[in-house]
Image (cartoon, rainbow, N blue to C red):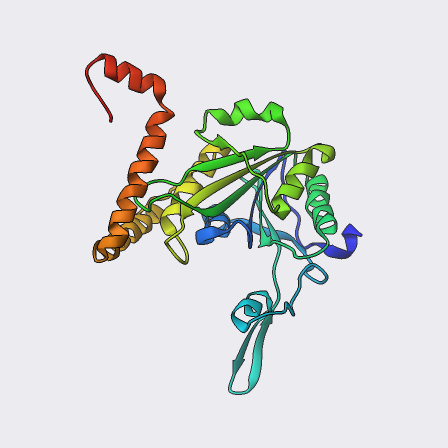
Amino acid sequence: MVEDNLRIVGEANLQNPRMVLGLSGWMDGGDVSTGTIRVLIGKLGARRIAEIDPRGFYIYNFPGAMEVTALFRPHCRIRKGVIRELAFPENVFFAAEEQDLILFTGKEPNLRWAEYGDCVFGLCRRFGVRSITFTGSVAGLVPHTRDPQFFCSVSDAQMKPRFESYGVKFSDYEGPASIVTYLTARAKDEGIEMVSLVATVPAYVQGTNPKCVAVVTRRIAGILGVHLDLDDLQATADEFERRLTEVVQEQPELAENITKLEQDYDNEVFSEMGDLKHWLHQRGIRLD
């Protein structure tokens, strides 16, 4: 039951709230999904209002090599023989009352997707949420010198015109699904509009990607109509790109491959701007 898994820990004065969610796991390349939500929580001063009890949703003793199984285990901290911390996965809802937003960050469940969905949609009913935006990230053939591309899927085809103006591509995908796909497919039956916006991040960059976090945060804020001061985030992103470029320049083969990625990226962008290219060519300006 929802009551057994969803704990309300605070109230919030919300009128017609929208939810934004990011999850670690399947679609959190470069920590962009969870990183974007962390930025929004911090920038908006959001307060914790609810959480999902992790018991029963995760596999902790996943079989396999230690470097693989370690990803599934709870985290502990032991100092001088004393256990100081034993941390299980957290799934927490925060409220930003001034912006009328609920921000949800957690870890994709391994088990009981339906019950996990019951918790998400149960909270939506309690606070009157009628729209959900998921921000995700996957590794792709995008160079670090370019902004990530966004792929979009929606719970209802009637939503598509609304997002066409944001420069997204509508997904054509077949393969393993995520909890977000499940939630998006279920959302319409729950009377909720849900959109999944997934950014592609450079596959050759490991760890947190501050540049992509900055780009995605700015895009999500723009779609939501939320005004944020992201100068500090942009400064971190610029420094990250500068240092990464320096490392790349020290490896000629990698630099050559990235140049090819840049060319492919730019050609794809220009091919999608066919009318503009034709207009420029008529005036003697060629882009190829």
